[in-house]
Amino acid sequence: MKKIVSILFISCFILQATAQDLHEDALTAASYAYAHAKKAHAANNVFHTQEYADKAIESFRKAEDLASQCECMEANETAYQATTDLESALEQDTYERSRFYVKRAKELGSTLLEQLTKCRVDSQNAVAQNPVEAKEAAIAEASEEVEQKQQELEEKRRQLNLEQQRLEQQIAEQNKLKAEFEAKRAAELKQQTAIKAKAELALKKLETALQELSIVLNEDATFQAQKDYLRSQSDLENETLDDTKNFYVDRAKELTRTAMKQFAGNAEN
Image (cartoon, rainbow, N blue to C red):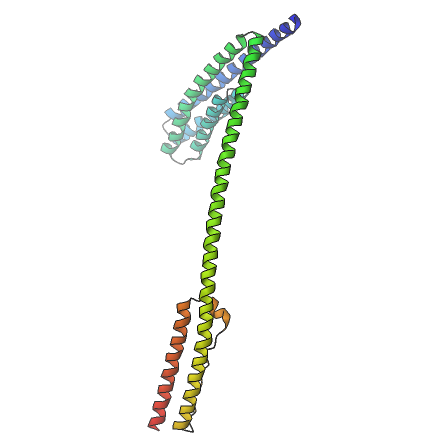
């Protein structure tokens, strides 16, 4: 047991030394990044602003990587955001726009130093605990994290179920509307088909009557049949019920006008 405790103490010492070096390196990189960002913000032209911004990016990236190794995830995210802002600054073509992003990165640089400092202190305090306490704390933290993750997953599952129900309801409503539309259209098309059959029959009879009347009035002047009222089923499918009615009304009017002109000519002869 004593050997195990000794090994744990030695391991803790090694981890503490390694973590300390990482924290120091991260703070150094963050300090350089902050200094370059300040210079970029203080510059009075876009060229120097972007020149120092470019230098700051390199330091922020290094601080981001070291923060990840230190498990300072909040600082890691801050460094990443600062890098993103500086990259945006390099893409701008005016001093004011570039300086706007540099200002945000400078403010994040100050925050990054605070976060890394706090992370280093927290790390030192954690390593200062005895091995048993450190192990118990790690187990408790891991258990809490697992429980939190489970709760997050459960909430996501619940949200997904709600979203699925919402989508299913939308699909059902759309299918209902589609079915209602198709039923209404089918009924309308049935009416159009009936009108087509009756109207074409009536127009044919009208033409026949006009032809017979034309012969009675003048045997040499035969009434010319139009036949332009005969249509296919596909014509009905591409129009409304009112369109179908209007079509046959127009054909009847046209047929009547043609007959009146022809009869008027016959009368003059």
